[in-house]
Image (cartoon, rainbow, N blue to C red):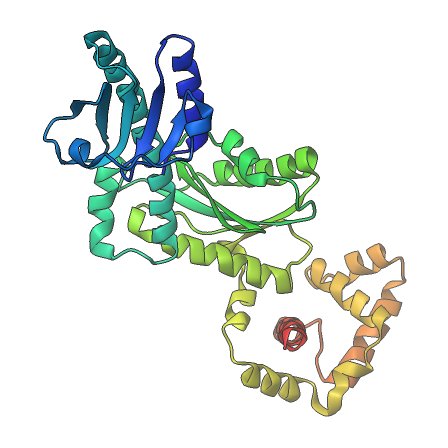
Length: 362
């Protein structure tokens, strides 16, 4: 239902112009707003004759009533405590305002609710195209889903900030999922508008941080060109946050397209992951590696297995790094200077991280 606050603001404006009691009721006779504030919240019981009348405008017992039709349904009744012709003209203007407010509010709400239902798979695929046409939402347009997870100030309202950042209610939709999750479904000019996607994600992160002091992480799905595929982009954004939280938890923006091996590992059963680790690190050889060794391995991978560059960044002699790599080979049987062995070790580290995360949740 349309916001009661909006109705009350309207009747207060009417009060300043018309010297007669004015009120707005729902179809059950409940007074939602009235120039006589004491009557707000009361129910008028003798409206049967008004409701059953074929006419929109009804005069009864010295009052004039006008039914307001929104989306082919009578939803509100506006009345004035007068039955003069002048009152009827005023009432027509007031009813028109109520109708316009109702259409605006319903379209705004229904569009967001419509997109939400698509994302959550709460609408039949065959109904999507028809409903999109009714709500004047483009069926074929390039769109991408941003899933925003927030942490920190519970009293802040990131929804209001996002609405102000993306005010185009026809093309962009801001939807609340729960207390910590919001979604932005944004329309793009082209399928490969990567700069716009990156710019949007950065604006969200920076604005929430600077204006509300909220830490946020954004998962980004892939671009879709049909409204029915918004649900897929949403699920991809969810996966981006889940997988990124395991393998790339230092990042604030995670793209589904960039998950790489992490996405593959996330889909594997834990039993297979444990079996893989046992095969790679026989006799728990991985546990024999200390923190300094892992730091060395990480730097070695970051520098694409380049011994000279890694030794320079670690501030150690090249021979010292070679000694450490020989030690790792002796313990694990993997020579990290060889691409295949380095790949196996890299994947095993990611699998171990995934299992630790899963076990922590259990």
